[in-house]
Image (cartoon, rainbow, N blue to C red; front, side):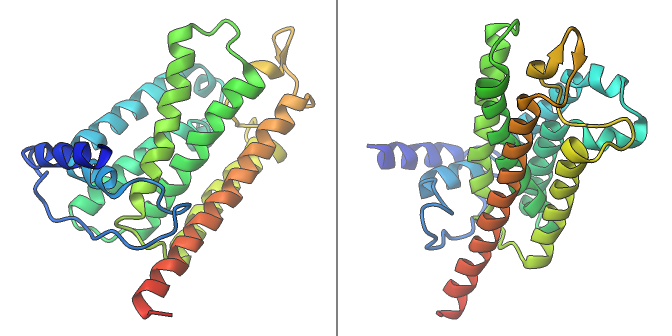
Length: 244
């Protein structure tokens, strides 16, 4: 049933501008590297321009969401603060670069890391660390499910990217730096992680609380997971190419 629906959706998507473009063939990757069905990957790639637009809208919303934190952060540290908006910008740029035939392996790696890392970190923090608190239900649910969708997007990237080691290194350095200044080394008015309601006591953030450690542990763990997934994808694609 799902396969039939997928074929129908892809048939419809071919009528969207750009939807009839040739797509990279699916490779025989294990399920933990390519968990999405082929028809869903293809549907997403046929809708590349609407998805780019949605991600750019998400970036704009995210910057607005971080406006108060940015206002209290030195300008030099601004690129380190809006992590999720930057991740949606990366995936939008990655998809656009693929569709326009630009070779940007480093951008694909940043998009892959960003969407998995922030897409999984945010629901974890909202559910386990922060809780809903006074956040309106609609916004709380939106934050959880929109970020979960980022993880789904990430697994489309492997369809057109092969993650050379140097590109993975770029993503590791960037997100490793983020982990460092977000939680462990206070620079330029840091820490620079997303404000955690669970850290605030009498209106002041207390980074010695367990909430800080939970968020830090999740962030570092996800950076390691992304590194493993990207390098594993590289190995499997090379194995497919060389037959070894």
